[in-house]
Length: 625
Image (cartoon, rainbow, N blue to C red):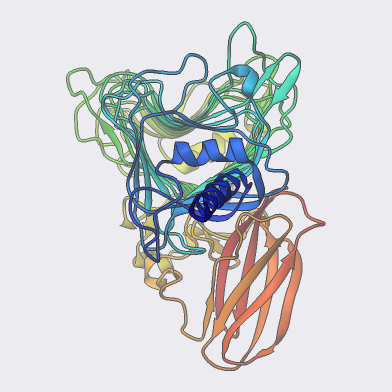
């Protein structure tokens, strides 16, 4: 009887333990967890089902111990009631999570979907405070977690953030598509039954995202609203989307803001496009926004490959909104089809928005190299560095940029192409240069329609006929790195490449403080100045990335001194306005932490800077509310 009672108590205890809400850390996988114990769940699907059946009683961390095969779609849609759910590798683990379902879902496409409880549009759940962190270290930035799909998986299986997902972070992972899926990561706002379901404060940062190269029209990051008889465009999108520091490889679309776009920051990404066919391809494409008051920042991106057979554009801006484009580099144009060389290649193209929408563009400190294409062509080509279409609903402010037309073909090429009236297009302090201007080869400096339809092959004729670029230069530029377009050391003494610093752009493409005057283009220093990085900054100071990041509303800034020194720690807006001086004091050698409270600030990217004597370190942080 005693043994029976003991067994019964053990059984009751086990059942009770299983029924307890989840709280704390749980291990997921078939590999042993640290300490040798068995993981609580064998798959991510099982762990999420436990969240549904048992609920959660505070923050929950799901640590992946090893490779997982997920044969079921994982739907993560849950009201966390202010708690946080974190999915990341166990310490030291580098898991591969493979989604292998061969059948697509009946309603909501996706292999791993955040924002719905199950495959039913009635199961949309406002889901907040979800963190997918692929680093196997605390506060790390290594990409140790890989999400993939098998070659035989359903083509509708991809990774998705859906509906009312708020304060969601997806960072430090690899997303590698193994099957013929259109999308790698899809973000979907929608409106149904009179209710808006829109992502708010969603951050996708430091991921390596690879769409399926053999899939026609494949895209890496796609923001696309749900369409159909039961769905409409949302009436409002209050939150923001942050696409930061990702490494993107796609066939046709790198980042596509396709439909229902809200305020968006696209910053620090490296983008490579390889369209093997004849379809139009884009590094960044914006096609639909809710209003012309939407703010879209596109900054500090490096577009290094633009390969296509007919049409390719580094950036194509069609959606209405207020755009700030700064510190971007664009190059790597390549024609994939020499048999029919009639193409349209653009660095940045500001296109005519749909009626009655308005586009307002501020383009500062961008560097565009129209590299040689190495083949003969004809006058039907369109090879252009920067073009703005003609329309009263388009305004462009174009300053401190570098445009280089190095075209070596018979294609019709222009470094700078503006439709419209000169007086309405502020353009100055740029460096626009044509390596080999030639009317025979149709290689030009610029064209402004409205000036008699004339093509100009030098800056003097351009100025006198357009009244633009009075203080601009036209000098040859040598790049130390023709992929990232870093200025070569011999450019250090070329004063023509310097311009007054703009209050809107106080840092360069890697976050270094600009001097006044500053170099035109995306980099504030030539290579000879030894562009500072975190690894080669002066040994006396070291500034770490804030944590958490993004944050709301407080975060911790940490720095290290190798010797006692006076230091100043300050926070700025991205346009250089001082927000707060957090510290101005003499501190001893060692590590120091400072708390920053941004309760009074609005969402966005902020710069924090540590200075000690002539040594300066600068980093970016993101506030989301």
